[in-house]
Length: 272
Image (cartoon, rainbow, N blue to C red; front, side, top):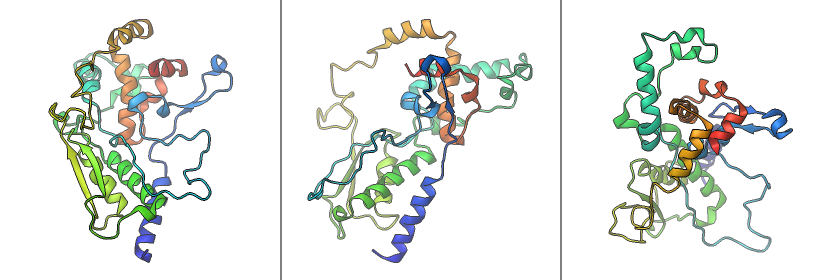
């Protein structure tokens, strides 16, 4: 490995250890004894990517063994906002704020005073909704770096199109495999091939998004149960939007003022 490549990997590794997102660790108090948690780790699919290894397991192979093949299934990097969340909860909330701008004085509300000057990180819905964010690209790029360092013997050194990264053609996914490839080869010329798989129904089971091809899959599954819980947990839906914005805004701005306006129990209820 050249000294330049080694330096690049070391530099990227050090940069990635710098916290991108401000941690927000809170304690539910007497409800859960001494349990503490980072809010950003309890936002379901909205959470920024983080590695979880509570058992402190080593990725190294067992003594006397060596890895000669590996397959990883990795989600796309963080997007600005998912289309469903934006359309059903966040966009109505943003419209509510816009309509209330001339009639509501948020400066008198201690927890919500920041809304007086707050602006959404979504400035162009057509270009941002369901699209990979710059930090999402960094997440995918860093994943490639880690894999190349973990499995150096599996990295091809000559042109070899059998070395592939597959990605679906969803708007939030297409750039992620490119970023992983860039990380695998540290920004140098890539050796291998990025294969984009259609989300059409025709491929059947030969797809990365079987929800599109499986006739038994229903996007509405669980919706009735969710609505029942939401009626018990919170009303109106705009409160849910503010909790969702906590994660999405953090991805873009590295922090969010929405973190601090909810109790630990409310965050755990949101996760549920």
